[in-house]
Length: 356
Image (tube, rainbow, N blue to C red):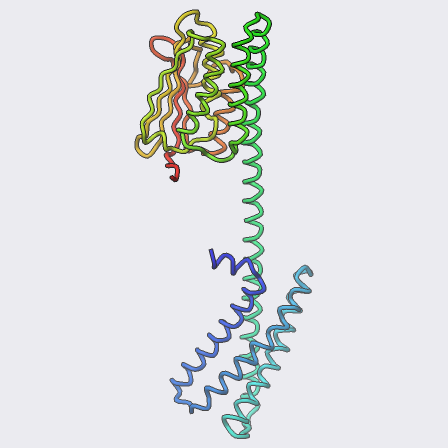
């Protein structure tokens, strides 16, 4: 944003406000001259006075920057003294411009005119000083706020990366164990096939930023790579059913959000079924929300208030933590018993459509 860029550039921002402020002062005085029907030459006097005020207040900026970290008492004393001296000097310049140019050498007889003009100028310079400190403090607060937001964002990113990368070693450990078993029983063809598919899956995950969200269609592709590895282990014992709408395929989801759920189903459900293990994956968009469901036909688990009564592995816990980090309270993660048997995981997140 151009305005934000201007505010961030303090040097440029000061000069914009300085010039605009004194132009505004000149404009107000010009309007006043029209009300009191001053001669046209008075416009020149107004311009000279505003120009003088603009020049004389610039040194105050550098003075205030030098005493910025001084104690409040010193700060107040310096501000009032500098404003009084600058205002008085500016009043002298204004008197000279008014009497020599507009009044052709006129001098008032009463001292009251001198004092009144001087006090008015001091008040204006004091207002200038107050605005300077107010804007300066505002800029500092904005700067601290941006630093805090940046630090918070970096902390969230670090947490998300930790949670995402914690899953990869866990999955890798299980896969390498399976490959080792295949080699021990001399099923070298299956072991080679599993290594090749593991390589494809890891290449895909390493090329995916764990912070960015990806279209569900891309997430399902990564899931297919993972399931091809598991099918080498389970062969016909593992079957997958997909029910995903076209609209849901374009929804943005955290990368590899489904893989740990599938891994959990395989570990605690499919691995314990001798015949016909099945995993169902459903996705649809409803009321501007993406609804994801992963269910299996395993033995199920003991639940309490939609959560596991006893923790099983890191997959479910990490998935929930990632959702909380990304969506705060605007999500749901609920477990329920599947019918006629098994466990079902339901996830609800805001619907965000991927850009084409």
